[in-house]
Length: 368
Ligand code: ADP
Ligand code: GN1
Ligand code: MG
Image 1: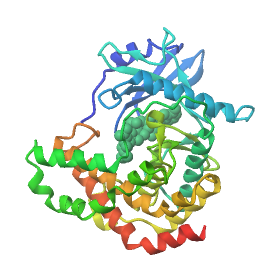
Image 2: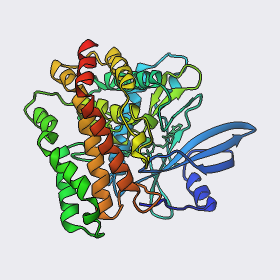
Image 3: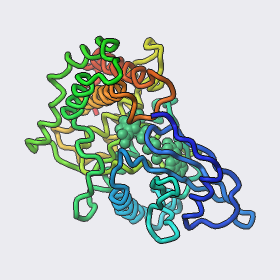
Image 4: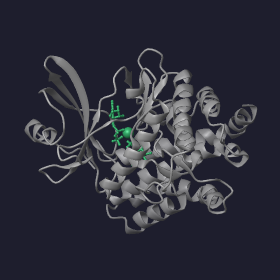
C-alpha cells in the first residue's frame, strides 16, 4: 500500500477532535512504520512547547480499533503501575490523549480511526542498529516488557490479529496468493517460492509445541523490531516499548526471533544489495545477554529454541512480504513497485546467514 496523503487542514481538523489545547506550531509525517499513518504534532501552550503523536490506525488490518485501544489501556496502565514513583515514570510507556468525547479513538471526517499519544521525549527510535550494545539494551527492554506483563490481571487480552505469527497459516496465505497470482508476478518469484518449499518442514515446529503445551502462552509484544523501542538519548537504555497494537497472548520466542531479525541485520530491511545483508554473531550474542538478563521466566524448551526462533520469524516475515507482493501490495506500506519483493529477499538472505551460523548461535545460547 502506498502512503495516504492528508492536507494540513484535514490534520488540524482531526487534532481538534482530541483533548489538546494551544497553538499548533507544526504537523509532520513521522517515523517509518509500515502500518499506521503517524504524525508528530508540535504545539505551543502559552509559549511552552509540547509534542504529541497522532496516528491513523490502519483499520483494514486492525478491524477492531476499540479492542486495540482497550488492550493498550490495560497494558499501559499496568506498566505505569510498575514504574510508579520513578523519576521518569511518565515516559516509560505510551500515554493516550483521549478525544474530546472521552473515547480513546476518534473518527476523522475522512472516515478513519485516529488516536493521540504524548510524544516521548529524551529518547529516540532507530531503524538500523548501530552497535551491539544497542542490541543488548533493546533486548533487555523487550524482555522487561514481557516481564512486566506476566502478572497482568485477567481477562485474557484480545487477539487483535488472530494467528499473527502462526507460520502455518502464513504459509497458507502465501499459497493462496501464489495460486491466485492476481498481479501475474508468480513466474518472477520462482526462486523465492522454491526457498519457501525447502523450509516447509520446520515451519510448524513452534506452532505445534504451543498446541501441545510444551511452550507456554505469554503476553507478548509481537512486533519487536528495533524501531519499536525508544532508546534514551544519553544512556542508550530502552526507555519505553511502543507500537502496542499487537500486544496480545503469544509466544516469547516470536518476540526474541523478531529481535534477531531486525537487530542482527547488517543492512536495512529493504537493502537491494544482498551482499550487504547478513546476520551478525556479536549482535546475536548481545541480544541473548540482554534478553536473558531480564527474561528469567523462560522454560528450558523456550531457551532451547531461541536461536531457531530467529530463523523462523525471519522466514515468516519473508513469507508475509512475498504473499503481499503476489497479492498486489495491499498490506505493508510500499514506496515502489517491487518493494515487498526486495524485503522478502533480504529476509530469506538473513535466514540463510543464520543457518550458516546455526551451530555458533546455538552455542552462544547454551553459554549464557
Ligand atoms: P507503525 O505501527 O506504523 O510502525 P508506530 O507506532 O511504531 O507505528 O510509530 C511509528 C514511529 O513513530 C515509531 O517508530 C517512533 O519513531 C514514532 N513514535 C510512535 N509513538 C511515539 C511516541 N509516543 N513518542 C515518540 N515517538 C513515537
Ligand atoms: C510491521 O508496524 P511495523 O512497521 O512496526 C508489521 C510487523 C512486521 C514488520 C516488518 C501489524 O511492523 O508484523 O514484522 O512490519 N506489523 C503488523 O517490518 O503487521
Ligand atoms: Mg512500529
